[in-house]
Length: 499
Image (cartoon, rainbow, N blue to C red):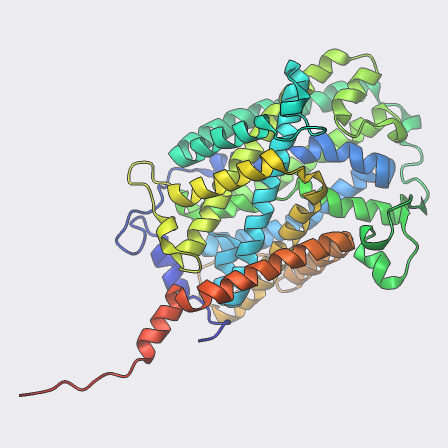
């Protein structure tokens, strides 16, 4: 048995059939291109636009945070092109996990699947706590049960995760309807923010657009500094172009999750066409909104006075338009709700793909005969996220979501030229232009952003990967479907006895 054995494409496609490929019920094909775009925008437009804009503008990049969002958007778009080719060619649940299994081998697939579970679980938990805080501010609820500071258990975060987990389990069509409604609300309010905020923009607030670099404050060195500064012995600093790139690595969190669209290949009516439209449509719309909202925010108030907790609502308050802040809070609640829902849906599909392959117990991959969803793995993931959101202050772990997504993007970018070489005859409805150059540029860009994250983030990421490897070699290595098939094929046949 080899950790680098690959899963044949024909097996992947057989599993994605409506009957599940093994006689059992399969996932239901209900989604269209607009639903996929709704899921994508539903998960991308969230914490990044309502929180990270203020934190990174004030602490790292100043008005240059607009450039940070543009850089992160370009890198995400490059990765989305690679996802689009693989998703349209191999439309199956699991996204990067499935692509890695078909191209680079089992151990790489397990690592990326384990990585994606981390990304979506922490992403959902972090956003759930943010949702709880916005709801408390909007309705005047007690912060001891709904806030981030001073609370032992966050009941608001637990409640919203369990509620949305139930929606995700009941059906993909119901999840799509809820998500599309929430997306309409928050995109409409984001457009309003840009249109209304332009009237309050002052040129003085945008100068200098990239503040000069200055030494980082106390406690920002050591494992808190970016890997690039630690490797080259650079003095820890903020602002300047280095600050813009460091902020780009952090605000990349805002773009993470669009790969959830690729997880829905087995539930899409015309996956070979609609997955591409959903992926690219999500990134283009989201990037335009991020750049517009961040530009308006840093233009309304000096970056040194931006509020870290609710930057956009506070900016409208500062210019005497507090009524707009209420709309922003409503958009934040709607936006964060859709992020949590899509995170939970994506986690269920990734866990379903891993379990179906036997790398974790196959029994949890069961599809509900009525709802057509992987209800067991979805329920397990929902409870895990609810516990994380309720009891752990996860704001410090948000960078782990970025490094997890970037790692997945590196793997997907590399998988494109590998699959082009190993399976040149494969039908590719969408092809990444200028391959292998563009996929290589995508992989290098993602790796560079990873190196701009802190040493502390890398250490935590390494610990999670080590735990994953222990689980793989302790269970999945010998008990997965490919290992069982190889073991059966290797058994010598006993000659039959006559007489």
